Image (cartoon, rainbow, N blue to C red; front, side):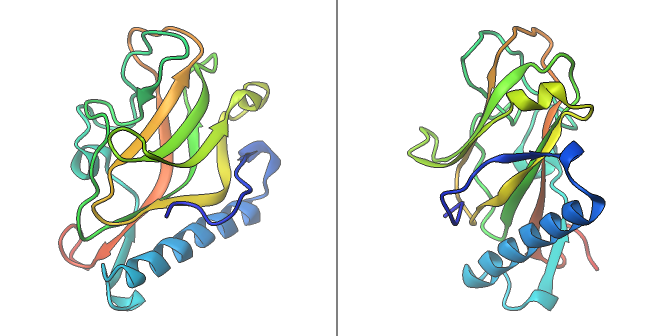
Length: 186
């Protein structure tokens, strides 16, 4: 289960206060923590570590940081995970995504989709990104977080609107909930 309601839209960060952003990050963590406890990743909140995802270590990306693969054809989906089409989440982790950012100008993509399964059998959310082009910051939060339970296959893709052979700096904002110890000891 990746979403909880029928309201799925982006909120550009230019339209948000710092308090709005902090509240939405906390809501994302709370939702993922509840999933982590329900799926027995952790027995209680005090046993959990909340951290930002590390693209190479957590998802097997081919490069460090968030760099999309080449945007080779307009309207042809590309993975957000450079080097791996649809990574499977570890059995001791829940991941929650609360927003995205685009550090390549002009805006090279118009849509972001969250699906589950290598073939995308279940769609969790579709976010239209074109309105970010008129903003100073091309970053947004989602109206509600999207999360993936342990061992789920994440098919998350951008839809390009321009061709960029060298890829683009496009990324997700999120958190991983896991037991304390395996990644960070304290």
